[in-house]
Length: 327
Image (tube, rainbow, N blue to C red; front, side, top):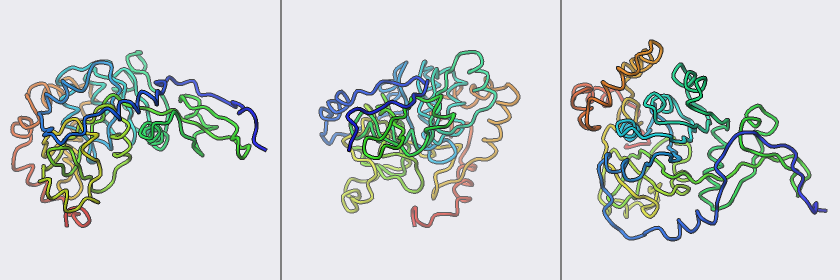
């Protein structure tokens, strides 16, 4: 017999954005599906689609196929009061926090060092515990247009206590089951391997939830290593990861994950990553931000003036694992 009512067993104490699946469905229904050229600069994309106070989600991280060029532009434009979905993240949240852009972080997994610790201690940033899987489920719920999804984990842990999840008695089995609320980010930032001018995008290799993140979000900004012809997309439709009709902007950004890697194209710049780590440990983040972000006008200018052609060619030559990506 199924229970007439579903008992609430426990509830986490973390803040979350209340889901509104009807509004999300209306937004998806009314989105423009015309084939129009969506190429714009990173400056225009961030200015147009990342407002102060936005909930921002992204796929993977600065170490591997993350939208690093777009994040630097967010800092350059001094966006404020952002709420991040840091699923399978690295020091992306650290960088944005150092730039004064972040006030809240939903944590799946991320680097926590001096910058984040000081910001939380000082009350400038609030963190809410989830897991990589739970955040992926929340995006999946948002993409499906449902208010929540059930999980077989998180419940009964300290993560649960500091999340916005709840624990109920499963009306079908009578067992405890954890529910996580849907999330519909204001904007998704996703770095892809290839894309056409309309936003049909290909992602090669590992990722956490690029499709779910794109489908759940109100606006989707893609940065891409390469812009390819739409006829190539049509020849191999099964290779399309993200469809054009959810995409709002396409930013051509070769080396867009720098200083991280894009498997099959270039490896990470370990010297740069060590420079970042040293800046954080030594309290020199202001100098780091000035050198790599504020003193250059764009991603292209940073590559030309701070990285150089020789270093980029070396990073490409050092990336020897191409099988399954481009070969």
